Structures are given as structure tokens and as C-alpha cells.
Amino acid sequence: MNSNSSTTLPRILQSLIGWIAGAESREFVLGDLQEEYGARSSEENAQWWLWREVFAAIPGLLLLRLRKVNFHSIGLTGLITIAAYLILILWGAYVTRPIMIGLRDSFPDSQSINYFFWYLPVRITGIFMVTASIAYLVFRDRAKFGQNFTQRLLPLMLLILLPQIWIWVFSDGDYSLVDSVIRIAADGFALLLGAFFGGWLRKRRIQK
Amino acid sequence: MSQKANKNLGEFEILVLAAILRLGEGAYGTTIKTDIEQRTGRSTSLGALYATLTRMEDKKYVRSKVGEATAQRGGRAKRYYSIEPLGQQQLEQSIRSMRNMTEGLVSWRIAK
Image 1 (tube, each protein chain N blue to C red):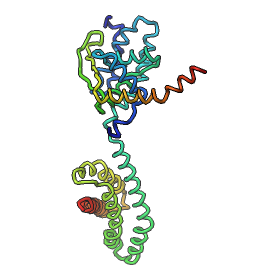
Image 2: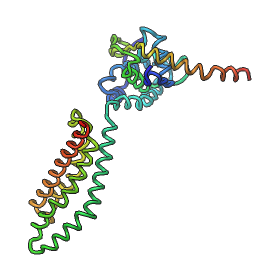
Image 3: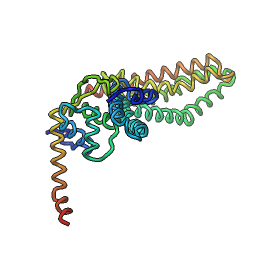
Image 4: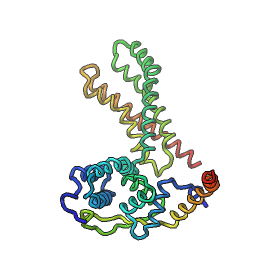
């Protein structure tokens, strides 16, 4: 059996399989493919066989590549994030916003100051409750705190905060810089506090 | 026996383990694939084969070791597989279950 250029795997195929298989399996998969292709090189349909083999191998190799990805954790994070965001939108629309608008209209002379004065106790209460509930459900034990925080709660916090950061960066006069900073800081503080409180409650329950 | 150990293997897992057992020292990707294709007549993809082998290695059914690189493989090494006692036990149990389920049925169909 030879290994001249006519039986060498095409470079594009080597790159494709090498990329999909990953460093762990690349050498063995390409070696097996090369060996079998070399044995079939005299056959008329060797090229066709080769490309059929490559396309047939892609799903399995992708599965192999993705086997270490924690889909359960990613899925749970996604679900929690969507659920938390929906709860916060509903909370904002039906509870926080009417209360804050009512309070703002009660103090027409110093609108902005009073708005944010009431913003802190009213809105962050909701954020705190939502986050604490999530943390209570998510945190299982002390050892997994870091993993849960980075894989579940951090994406949640970022997703909730991103719209407000977006407002801060791109708003054209509707929100002042100081107002935006207060909103982001308040929400972020509530998120962290809620997460801590939920985690603390969970740990207490586990220890009992 | 634990609940995990009682779980029967899938069809492709049985074929792969049987091929490894049959090939002995020479069981690696290409030879396992060729053995399955020749004996069963079914087309086997390298991707599915390696995904199955890796999964069974995680379950301690098989173990692997890196072999020599050859010119016919473009200077790439082989990964040799051998069956572990747990894998052999699982294979025997799955085959026994299959025999128990098909024995009378096959006789009946042949007689008819």
C-alpha cells in the first residue's frame, strides 16, 4: 500500500475532519480514514466513498466533541434566565411602575430625585425577591457555589443588567448618566444581595 | 448486581464490543469498522464508531492505548481498544437477553 499524493486525503477534508473531531480524536480518525482510503484508492468510486464517509462521520464526531459540554446546566441557566426576566417584566409593569409613577406624580417639583428615592425600595424589592428565589432553587451545596454562580446566576445577572447598560450607553437625553448609574448600581446590588440571601437560606436548609 | 450493570447494551454497542473481542490485539478504528461491515452488511461511520467507543471507555467497558504510527496512515498513530471485564459482562448479559427473547420466536418463524 502506498501513501503517495493520489491517496493522500485532500487538505480541505483534513481540515474539516480535524476541526470537527478536535485534538483528542483528530489523529486517530484521520489515520483510519487515510488507511481505508488508501486501500480503496484503486476503486473507481474511491473519491465518492471518501466524501460519503466524511459526511457520515460528522454527526458522530460532533457528538464526541460536545460530550463534555454541560447541556443540563446551560439549559437550566437559560430557563431560569428567561423565567426571571419574564417575572421582572411583569413585576415592573404591574407593581413597580404604577407605584413609582404614582409617587413621582405626587412630588412634581422634584421629579427625578423622588423617582429614584422611591425606585430603591420599590423596584429592588422585586429584583431581590426574584434573585433570592432563584438562588434558593439553584444553589445545592457550598462546593458547587462557584460553578452555579458562573454557569447560572452570572448569565442571569448579565441578562437583566444588559438592557440597563444599553440604556446608559445609548440613551440620548432620556436618562441622565447619574440616573442610569443609580439604576444599574441599585439593580446589581439587589441581584447580588438576593443571590447571597437565597444561597444562605439554601445552605441553612441543607445543614439542618 | 447494580441497576447500572443490569442495563442492556444497544445494538451498535454489542456489535462494537463483539468486534473488539474477536479482533483481540488488532482492534482499532479501521479494523473494528471493517469487521462490523463485513459481518453485518451494515454501513458504519467512523464518527458513530468513535462516539460509541469513547462512551464505552467512559463507562469502563473498554480501554484504549495509543499504538504505532504507520506510513499507510499518513504517519498517524492508531488507537487500540481492548475489552474490560465489565464490558465483557455487559456483552454476555445483552446477548443472553437477546437469545432468551428470540429463541422460540425464531424457531416458530423457521418452522412456518
